[in-house]
Amino acid sequence: LIFAGYSDWRMPNRRELESIVNAGTTPPTINSAYFPNTASDEYWTSTAYQAQTYRAWYIDFSTGDINYQNKINSARLRAVRGP
Image (spheres, rainbow, N blue to C red):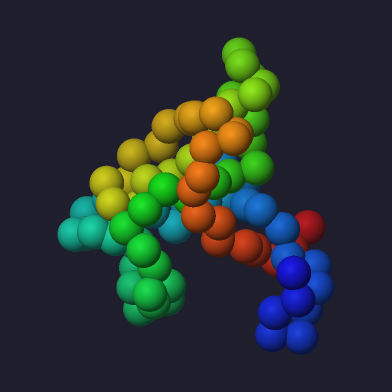
């Protein structure tokens, strides 16, 4: 992925994506001033569900819930940069 002149984008881990959830708002449960045009949908994290590694954690920005599902299922992705 090359965006805004950078090619070091990656999938966020569960802790990183969970840190931008704003559960006290109406959907999407995110600060729209910083993250405009965020769909009220499920977004993948890079964190596998340890008991069943064919599953991974996701954040549902329509509710703020955190859950896991099979990695073959579809969900959105919010790419991040950094170590």
